[in-house]
Image (cartoon, rainbow, N blue to C red; front, side, top):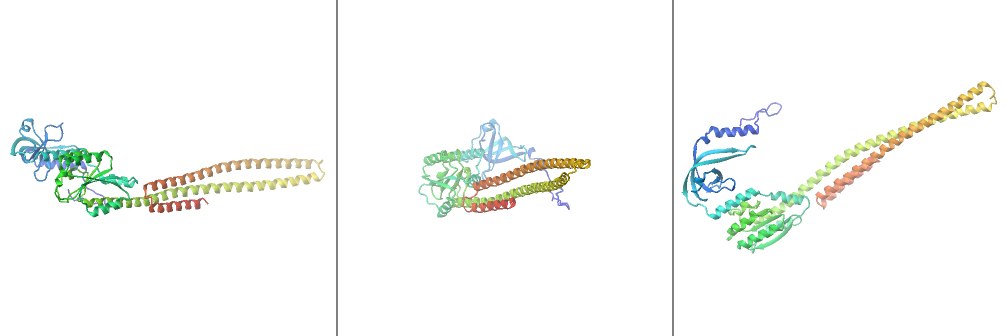
Length: 441
């Protein structure tokens, strides 16, 4: 790929799309004319692992164990026995399924047997079992264990030891530390008796443990763990399997079909301990992040709601104050008018037409002022009632926010460590409640 050029604005100016890269790869094969030549290949002949594709078999590399799919006619296939070391001639073909997936195949036209049965029936069966395990899929033991620990569900793990074997003290030390968070169930059986060994594996699988660990040190008799009965039992399991067998350099086929491999038995104890500690640390970090997010989210909402509540209260106080001033003014006006009316009435000049007219006008003004004040009072009461409803709604919203904080607190507590971590979470929540009380006041 050419060196990527970077523009002044730090944007990539030259790049490839996935489709372009796939096309380039296909073009390279075409340029080499691989699919236009007769190619000779040498390897161990094995039957394919799918009954639906009878003519698609495997050619296995003697040294690396890598395999290539070969398409072979019925006539040529009848001459071969699985395990033969053969030379085959044919044309290279390739299949593409999109998303960058390619498979190289050899369409066989000629076959020469170099050596009869270079691998025995046990090895052939082992290969079949490995292919079967690949089709079933390997389970993610790390994820299963971490998810259980993170949600405060104690993992149930079966430890199957070889009867009489002595495991390193480091294993027990790590296991003992992890026991604070994991329930271990120990079983011992003679690995030398393959039938009983396989039966014990099948029985443990029925008990629905989260994980089953097979544990044995190195030394003589190690080949018993690769007995076909044992391997078939392991491949047929639904429970994830950890293989902690032998020394790191020991070639144990069981490692090919286990969901997780631990190089030596004592490292299994360390693995359990490290996993527990890693999850505990992640939970504490997650707890702190969640607490900070809740604090920010709800304090922002409380601030907004409190500000709105304060504005409503100020508006209510202004209406009450304005109404009081209006009432005082109209009361003074009515009082003055009534005083003047009294003075006229007391003057005994009621026969005077002007006095009568003045009395009538004053009485009308007093009546109008009284009616106007009644209307103002009614309007003010309406506004006060509406604002009181808004203030009550705001208060209920604040209470709802506080309930949400408490619910989130409970969720965090359920996900977090029920010891020292909870004290820190409680302190954060108390601080939020105190802040809320201060804002409301």
